[in-house]
Image 1 (cartoon, one colour):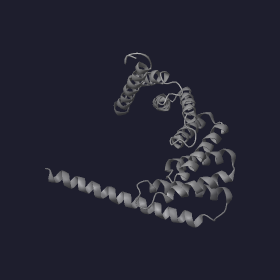
Image 2 (cartoon, helix red, strand yellow; image 1 turned 30 degrees about the horizontal axis):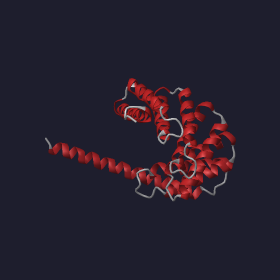
Image 3 (cartoon, rainbow, N blue to C red; image 1 turned 120 degrees about the horizontal axis):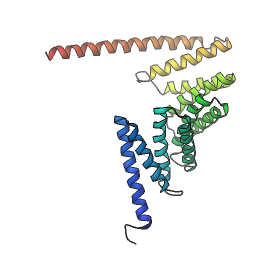
Length: 253
């Protein structure tokens, strides 16, 4: 069969379309420009059309198009776009059944976008699905001894929203447990520890306000003290950096 005909031509065309789309999307991320993003999205659609199931690269193309559309959503906030993203991510998830190595990523991506959609549509069904997907992702992460830092924080946030909507205290308890687990993965000296310390303290304060129970009082005090210390250290480091910058500038004059 000639190299320029049939399945070979389709494979070459889909690969070229995909590579150009990825390059244009990278250009958009560096320089912006809606025209560039539109072209990248159009090319991703075309490449996906040339990769019907069970094409081995369909999973990649579905995710690439979903990523491009998420950039559109960030740009204009159009929820029709987010609905399309979610539809694509459902397709991607269906393409990687357990124990596919990319299933955890697909679960987390779909859960994150459903959480975003919930902030718009307010449907508890949407939020519940996001939480269920995060839980499945966490279970897979743990089964592979991975550190699921993103899913821990994201599901904790979703559970806090569930508590605010339903008043079910178990959701808040689970959110606290997940944040504590994340804090254990952010040891002293970690650049994101301050954020997690604040998040744990805030959720514990919320539980204390709701229940009137002072069982968390000591932990809240300890976290607050650590937070003050971390902020003091950060402020001191910023001052020393500024002094060093000024000294370098003076030496150069």
